Amino acid sequence: MKHRRMVFMLPLAALAWSGWAQAEFPDRPITWVVPFAAGGPMDIVSRPVAKKMGEILRTTIVVENRPGAGGAMGMDFVARAKPDGYTIGIGSVGTQTIVPNVNRSIRYDPLQSFSNIGLFGRYTNVLLVNLKSPITDVASLVALSKRAEANVTFGSAGSGSSNHLSGELLRALTGGKMTHVPYRGSAPALTDLLAGNTSFMFDTFNTTMARIEGGSLRALAVTSPARSPFLPNVPTMDEAGVKGYADAGGELWWGVVGPAKIPPATVKKLNTALREALATEDVQAQLKNQYVEIWESTPEEFAQVVQTSYRKWNQLVREAHIETTE
Image (cartoon, rainbow, N blue to C red; front, side, top):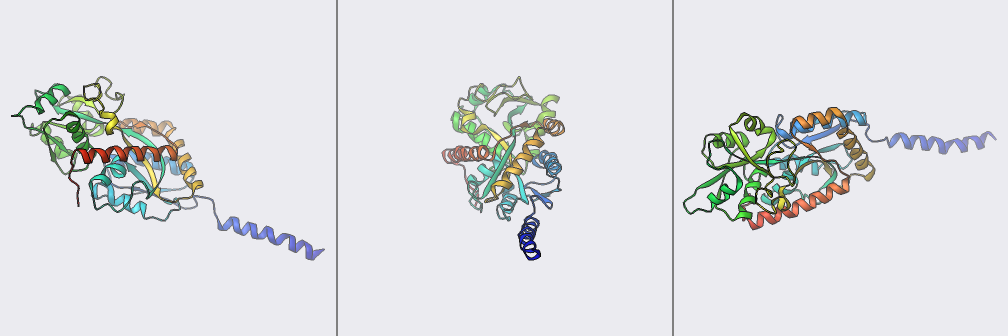
């Protein structure tokens, strides 16, 4: 009888050892990669989400900034990480769909190199002119760009940035003559717009709202499919007369990604934590302060958004003959 009891208990001990060896995710800190510098829009937006997800998962999420190449360096780091859920990061329409279309040196495949964990927000570019500019609406800007003697220019944060492509989309849909002037970031581009050295510019709310409200910049239209709750009196590009603008690529977003082949159960757990974080009042308030509209999704829905967005921006890059970076 004693021998039988020992035989019966051995499998239980093996099961206990197996359960200990395969600890439930997460059992250690998670690294959250931001592919831009600390203090920038993406960094500021993502930190409260990362912090709240850590609280929900009962672990520490460590934010690590890895800037460079328009976000590509950070995303490449994520794509090459071990697919165990302990390295994730914030991606955007820029890093996942725009930069891969304009930079030939990108090593990751935006459609194959990532596990799409979930969306968390959409942002909007706004078409801006200097308040002293004679351009009062989108129609007058387009009309000016079609005059033979006109010299219409638009600044951006750099070639391949979302505000660069927003301008290229306007040019492609209207057939106007508009010359792109790239800068090293939005700040110097805005400085030249305010000085009257460029005709117009697209940029995000969190870098321009103070100037819009202060009266130094005039907002002509927003790139989103519907009017923004942050500027409800400003029309969309489609409403302003540029039909098909939003459908051609006007949707801008942020989402959480990890390397490809993270186990489905781990992706589901991360997605659940992300959606729970977005449902909390403090995260909602912090995102609202950064002019971000919450957009949560399943992993499958996020993957579909990436695919659709990539296809649209690829078409724009080809049709607008935008030069790629080697």
